[in-house]
Figure 1 (cartoon, rainbow, N blue to C red):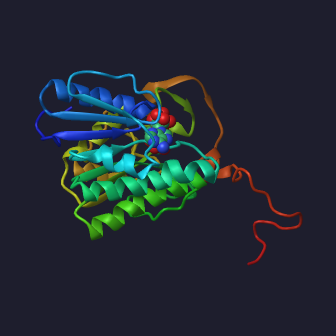
Figure 2: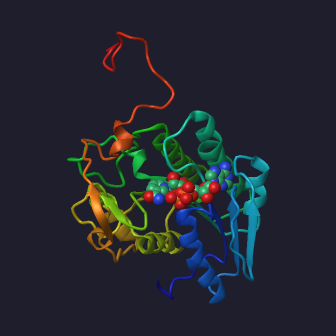
Figure 3: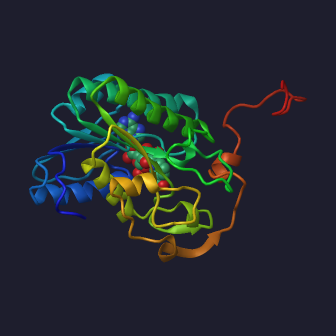
Length: 279
Ligand SMILES: NC(=O)c1ccc[n+]([C@@H]2O[C@H](COP(=O)([O-])OP(=O)(O)OC[C@H]3O[C@@H](n4cnc5c(N)ncnc54)[C@H](O)[C@@H]3O)[C@@H](O)[C@H]2O)c1
């Protein structure tokens, strides 16, 4: 990572016990040790299990408004990974993904936080067809309730960038896992190291509101990531180098893959009605 750009001095990572949160926390713990930041606060509803000088941990739910307000106090930047990362019922998604984000943006404004980096998702645009290449100007086209919660977070960031001093950087993350395990990942993969590079850009670049794609070096994928490159993102990894075992061959007509083809959980409609009814 670059040693040149100045990082915000006090950083909160939400969802710090999760897969991506742990990766970014490791990078920021190094920045703390190296004197590039002064304070690192980690929040998760689950036990965090990371400790060290200058590291504060908070085990609580961001769905509680007072938790959101207390957690951003004294922070310059927030990296918001907390939430449910797949399709789910509204009873679970509304507190974890919608209320939590709403509280966090309000809290950040009230406490003078400079910027929020938001873990959005490719599922915010998962209903675009696979043969359409989209860029950061593509409006949300969610493929699931989960994707809709990510579209909500993006639009929250856009609204607050217009009406408040708070900046937002929304990463439409593709598939950020230890390995490439599906054919679809060849179009959507982001290595952990590239994800951390993208976070570093979000922490250091100058912007008010941006959408970028969380994608490794994939020049022919679904997403034109020129906006991320313009801001300074330079992915170093290619998905081919992360392939592990036989690939899941499922391919579908929508960018969101199986999430786009899966039915909405928990609801059905009366016999005789089809998706085309009521035109
Ligand atoms: N990994 C990917 O490929 C990918 C792709 C697109 C988007 N994302 C998004 O990135 C973020 C991190 O993904 P991940 O793969 O690390 O998922 P993860 O499930 O490993 O991490 C999410 C963390 O959020 C925490 N959390 C959930 N609800 C919470 C609440 N109410 N308050 C506080 N913490 C709460 C969980 O305990 C968990 O540790 C998620 O928001 C996910 O939607 C990930």
